[in-house]
Amino acid sequence: MIAMDSELQDKLLDLAYEARERSYSPYSNYKVGACLLAKSGRIYQGCNIENASYTPTICAERNAFFKAVYEGEREFEAIAVVATGNTPSFPCGVCRQVMAEYCEKDFLIITGNNDRSRVVVCTLDEMLPYSFGPKDLK
Image 1 (cartoon, rainbow, N blue to C red):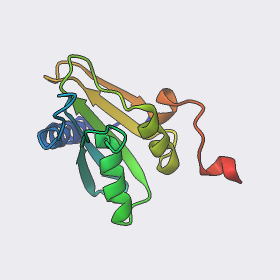
Image 2 (cartoon, helix red, strand yellow):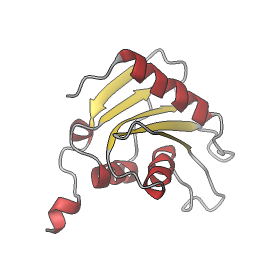
Image 3 (cartoon, rainbow, N blue to C red):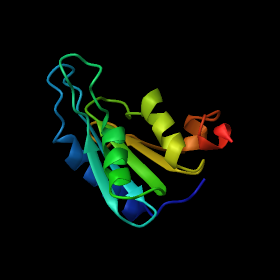
């Protein structure tokens, strides 16, 4: 696993908590924020945005990734994800698949709970060991 400087990890978590405040989640009341670090050093925040018909809802992680990809980023180091629950917020299956599209197996996922009393750090490979990605289409 890639080690991450604790100051950088704290900064990513701080920005994820900040992004969480922009969440539009009137149906679930489950606010999620994410902060994505590209290998270029640029940072992209995202939040979950719900829709009354549910299917068009976007997760915070994909919101951050799609903003970054739009800006031309294709390589990423880490993402911090936080929510309003008492347990750390892990990315859903769809978000994990998006991560598998753009990230190496050692991509770091930092998750935190509502009050930052629990933080878990793992790699994409630990979270999604048998991912399907661009390499599988060759």
